[in-house]
Length: 89
Image 1 (cartoon, rainbow, N blue to C red):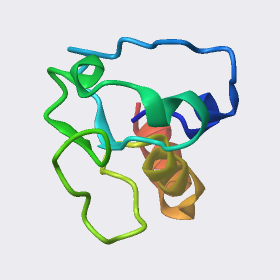
Image 2: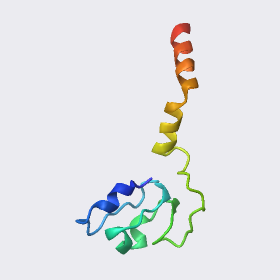
Image 3: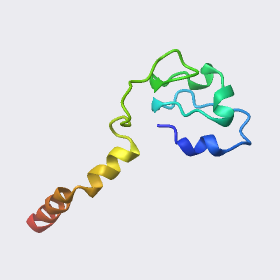
Image 4: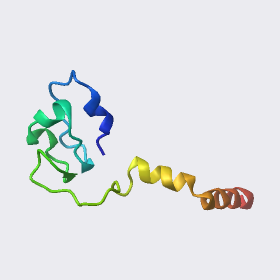
């Protein structure tokens, strides 16, 4: 996904993210609102302006996003599983 923090930069005149297999909502703000849709070509998982593809109305990020990985890392069951695998070896 495209980090929301990139919208905080005011010095970007262009940012070509085409063909990077990105997913999720395109952040809005500052220069991101002026970017042409062609800068996002080749990323079928992206949605939101300037693309004509609407995003789902959920607040959750796409599976495999950094937030999803952080949620898994906080799950205490993973610690037990890792400890069990380490003990078995």
